Length: 199
Image (tube, rainbow, N blue to C red):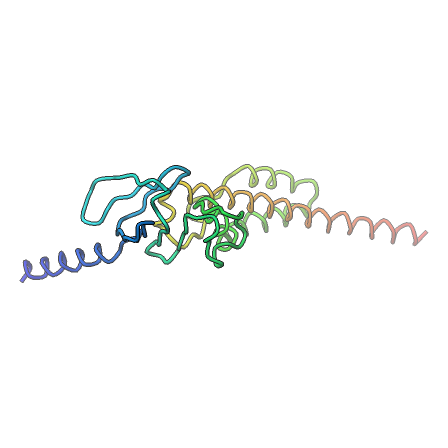
């Protein structure tokens, strides 16, 4: 019985491995199923279906790549799909920029640092301490909030996502500092005005 269950497990796993592939459409019209590992200005790194060998294809030979997650990348200047053209420079198909865009959409891990800095900033100038500390620390992996582990395994996407998340965190932390400090300074101005008017 255990052998039968194990065999069924292997068959199902094998099926999922075959199905769980990225798709590459060549300019010649052919299609290739593979796991896309990397994309740069010169070539695409991939592992073909039913193989363990890493190969490199020239970008010029590829028309488009479709990730298992549904992300579609055209390797031609005028063919970037509308859904991914937003916030991308014309003609750029970089996974780095897609990572930046996704970080803008999904990264919310800054909230604790931003809120903590705001609260500390109510006791001006003590808010400078958490503002400097939080803005100097990149977001932890656990707080990034990314949606696709497979894309995060791509170095271009990972770098784009994490660097943009870090920028967002720094911006939100200093916004928290500005708001908290502004509230405190405003409170003191109102208090001084009341004291002056009472004389």
